[in-house]
Length: 310
Ligand SMILES: Cc1cc2nc3c(=O)[nH]c(=O)nc-3n(C[C@H](O)[C@H](O)[C@H](O)COP(=O)(O)OP(=O)(O)OC[C@H]3O[C@@H](n4cnc5c(N)ncnc54)[C@H](O)[C@@H]3O)c2cc1C
Image 1: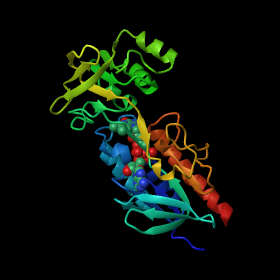
Image 2: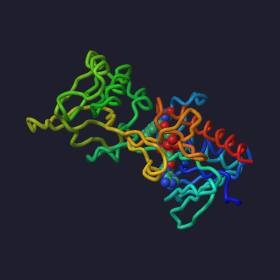
Image 3: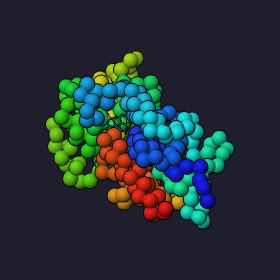
Image 4: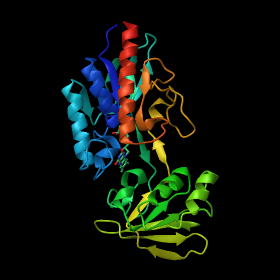
């Protein structure tokens, strides 16, 4: 039976577009489905300073545009504003992907690259100042805040690890947590609290983030005493967790307890012909350089899989 495409890539973030460059260049009939804007999480980032090869940095928008152009140059079709609503593996081993516009398309293989989204802080100022002092990634944005006070919100492993990373740059780190202890690994907590720059603020929540164009401060409420305090921080790192966009495939593939897709080093899921890559999956780090590598690996694995089917 013939199919509409050799591969359908679900998600047009850096992972999906990197995969499309490779599958397109290998002359595989490639479709990328992107339900929002190409570039994924990075599209809205004001500055990327750590992607190797861009010594002067690059905006998220320009980065996303460059990836999109590259994927299209090798013939990948990219449907923007169209999501995948369902994925079924048929008895013949091919896939039927149900689109948000009502169509069904078939493919010999599928790469899942739906990424993840951060848990938000539902307080005034969060949305307005996102990318202008409000950040969900200390590894990405920490270096922009040298010798100024910052806040970290959260108490799990990522808050403690990324808070620790910020001690290289910030003058002070107000580490705000709603409980009276962190829930990260003990060793990480000990190392973190040992840092003189770290000032834990227990039993407290952020009530508002102030600033017009950039973060100028935050208001904190102590949940025990009900007292309110103002902190004149220049950045707020909200590290309260991530939600993988794996709902679509929860019945199809194996997920870990956080909902991340489990893959092997070839980006294979447990379903033959179904690959997954990037932030959607369990990865050692969540950065552009490695999700791009994931996308490339998934594309090469698709090629090998399809060759085996010939
Ligand atoms: C604010 C911010 C700044 C960052 N800065 C840096 C940095 O400076 N350096 C760095 O290395 N990393 C940075 N990162 C991390 C980097 O952006 C991510 O690791 C990377 O974007 C992950 O790529 P991805 O393609 O796997 O997922 P995503 O970027 O999440 O892209 C997934 C895409 O899939 C789409 N999608 C989801 N579900 C569907 C569906 N059902 N159908 C169709 N499309 C779907 C989404 O709309 C999205 O566009 C930053 C992250 C954030 C949030």
